Image (tube, rainbow, N blue to C red; front, side):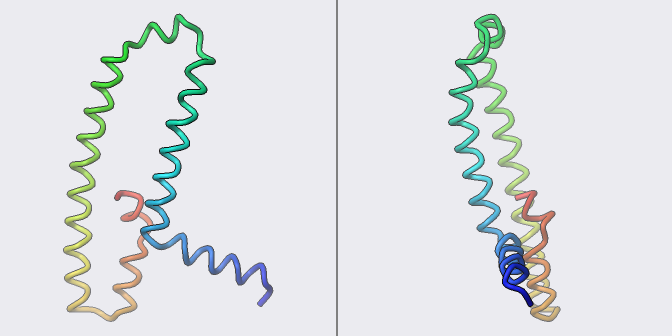
Length: 107
């Protein structure tokens, strides 16, 4: 096996871990907030005045509340699945469920 294939395999293994995805999404959020300050200065004043701060804040609060509810529901389903698989199936199945990309993206 070449060195490049080995590194790709190791990288793929890390990308399957939940904490790596969460950290990546958190870093993406920080970069987005930082770049929004730069982009705001590039927008024409007409566009900036069209959207009020209060309406944007209210919209972000609604989205955050909905995302919190979905995350709590998904986490509950995930924990229930882990408990069921831990007692009924082999450790390999438990690992596959833990590395499920769809569940990780939902969280």
